[in-house]
Picture 1: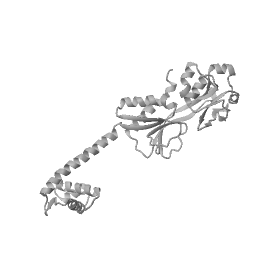
Picture 2: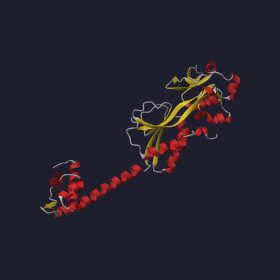
Picture 3: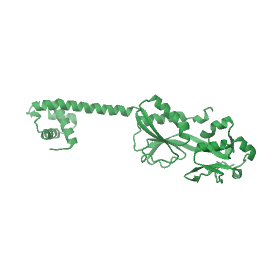
Picture 4: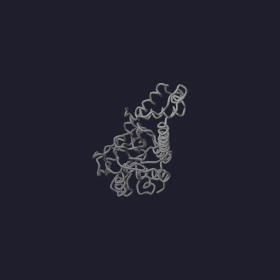
Length: 310
């Protein structure tokens, strides 16, 4: 007796089709199989359950008493399977379930969270699991569905992505600090200032500016202070601790309000992309698609920090 569930289901399908079509020949045509394959599947099924289900004559097939009972049960089972498949298919089209998202520590709460919460308000079946980190997470290994990444996206071999914006960075300081220490006129002047530098994994990142010819130059300053959190960098600049190289998404409200002042604005770099990424190996489910579409609408063509008011 076969214990293969696939063989069992094949036998049930062959049996039900044979009864419905009235012959092995017609059942075979409906199933896209040979007549002998259908007959063998039914025979294996009878052998498996230890009962004769069909009376076979040269002209027609007829149900035995056991066959009629089994046929009615099979119809119920197949109906349940069909309903289950339809339910799963409908759920694949619904924006529902758990979505795991990884966001940058400072950028995520300020600019991405409002978009995600708006999506959740519109789709009550969607649940979020949001983590915050500035490291490049491995989406497959870490079980993440979606990540927003600042700067170069990294290895895209296993990822699909959409660019949702570009971040511009400027040298900023409080007006009080600049009134006291002076305003730098060239990138070289920066080295004479107190500098607050962002550090990642214990390493202070260089400042990349544009020189008078419009070329990128890496300015390696000796930091007065190093911090590993963008919001802390902003707070230090607001407190007058020195010059800070801030993204406009972080500094824009303070620049508009006059709490911070940008210097060497022509030297600011605006070619750092912002991407939303998801694993290539997974289908783009409705819940991923609706969030990606919301981020594209929310960040393009003008990013929210360039159009929002303080």
